[in-house]
Length: 296
Image (cartoon, rainbow, N blue to C red; front, side):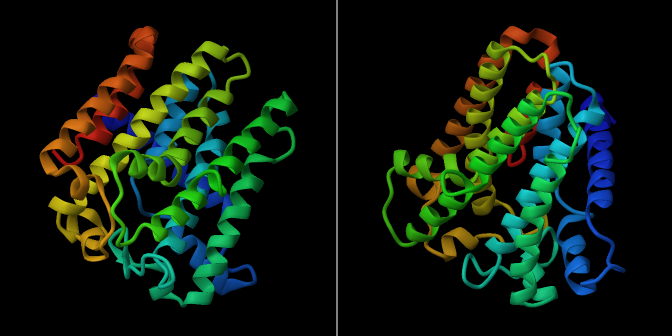
């Protein structure tokens, strides 16, 4: 096992533990809701956003313990978005992370409440008293996650996505959608990790932010490539769903070959913005490799 795999497994494990502690026990009422919340969050996913939060926290000199709640918060928002995304009124998918979607395992009403509750829990995790010694920094982190999750971020991107089904978008319009739908939360994960260090410098925050913007778009381009090339077992969700739903993607707009070129260009731009950190940015470079090479 290589160095990156060892590190990633350790972060995934500590993130799972942090989520396990934050999520209410299924033995606590309302039992079914708490059980469904745990079903939707635990034991699945690559935890890319948590890895990103820990990588930027480490780069900026923060202890891993300080990054745990930030990483867990962004993973809770991501999990909530997947639960709602799979529902019949959204993308209507029966499979998520290799198992039945939350609304299939339970029911639509429970899934709706699961998403609502996970979103609230994310902000609870980030707003706990005395989590950081600088209250203004903690408030800034809450604000970053709120913007990334709302109409100017992920929720807004999903609204654009739903309105785009069957439409002919150009590359700029598709990019605008994914900067919000996928990129906003990836960018927030990177910033939250950096903000875990109370001594992080503005120029470092700016470089990390630019890196995250490029790698967030690269993540979506690769997702579109995988949707076109990979099978359901590999994806853990229904393969070919975007094409079947007549959704515009980077593959349908650019073609497979150009989409792969674009993923590489976005990767190179991301790496360029953290090059000044030298070897200190090793984890960010490795994460960029991991994100962009999933489908190749």
